[in-house]
Length: 205
Ligand code: ADP
Ligand code: MG
Ligand code: MG
Image 1 (tube, rainbow, N blue to C red):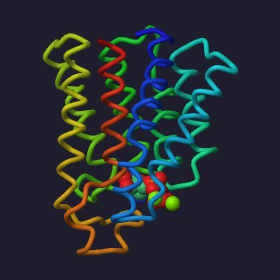
Image 2: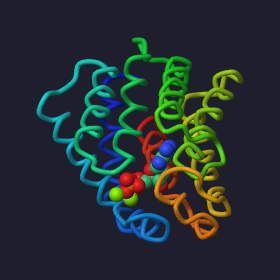
Image 3: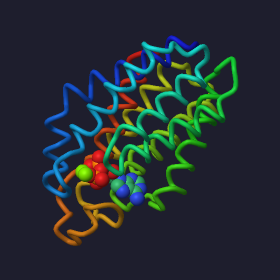
C-alpha cells in the first residue's frame, strides 16, 4: 500500500461523508447536537485541501497531516478523537506498508482513541465500529486472507458494529446526557467510522 492509496482513502472518505452528511447530522440530532455530519464534512474538506497543498511523501505523512488537520479544524469531540487515531497510526506505521503492518498500526490508533476518550466497547461510540474493524483485520492477517478481502471484512465488521449501537445506552459523549433516551438510535460517530472503513475497502479493491 503506497502513499497514493492513503491519499485516496481520505478522498473517498471525504466523498462518502459529504454524501451522507445529512444522515450523520440527523443521527446526531437524535442523541446529540446535530452537527456531526457538518463537523466531519468540513474537517475532511480541510484534509483534502491540506493533502493537495503539501503532498505527503509517505503513508505516515498522509496520516499525520490528516490527523493534525482533523484535530485543528473539527469543532466537535469527533475531531480530536479521529485525529488521535490517524496520528498514532501514522507514528506506528512502518514502510513499506503491508497488511500486517497496517493492521498493527490501526490497532495502535484505536488504542490511542480509547485512551483519549476513555470509551470502551459497548459505550455507544465510534469505538463500537472501530474495534470490530480492527479485530477483523487482525484475524484476516492471522488467517492469511488477501488485502481486498481483509478490508471488505473490516468494513462489514464496522458497519455491523455501528448498527449494534442502536440498542445501546450511551455512556460517553453528549449522547450520555440522555441516559435511557439514547437507546434506539445509531451512534453518529460509529456510523461515520463505518464510512471510513468502507472508503478503505473501496480504494484497496
Ligand atoms: P460533539 O459531540 O462534540 O458535537 P460530534 O457530533 O462531531 O461531536 O461527534 C460525536 C461522536 O463522537 C459520537 O457519536 C461518538 O461516536 C464520538 N464520541 C464522543 N465522545 C466520545 C468518547 N469519549 N470516546 C469515543 N468516542 C466519542
Ligand atoms: Mg455533535
Ligand atoms: Mg458539537
